[in-house]
Length: 83
Image 1 (cartoon, rainbow, N blue to C red):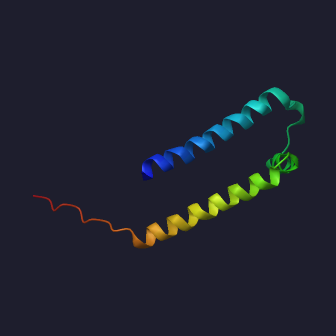
Image 2 (image 1 turned 60 degrees about the horizontal axis):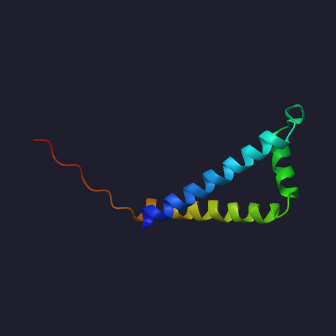
Image 3 (image 1 turned 180 degrees about the horizontal axis):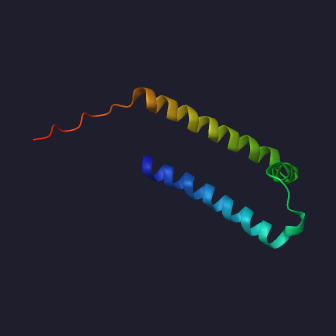
C-alpha cells in the first residue's frame, strides 16, 4: 500500500511539472525569461496559484516531518558478520 501511495504522489508531481513545462513551451516568450522569483510571482497570479502554493508548502512540510520521524525511529539492522 505504501509503495502505491508514494508512486501516486510522484506521478502527480511529474504530471504537474510536465503540464507547466508544456504550457511554458507554447505560451511564454523566451526573450522575456527572468529569474526564479519572477516565475514564482507569475505562477501565484494564476487562478488558484495561491492554493497551489499552499498545497505544495503543506506537502513539503509533511515530507520533512515524515523524514524527521523516520530518522528518529528507524531500526537499522546490524550487518551480517563476515565469515
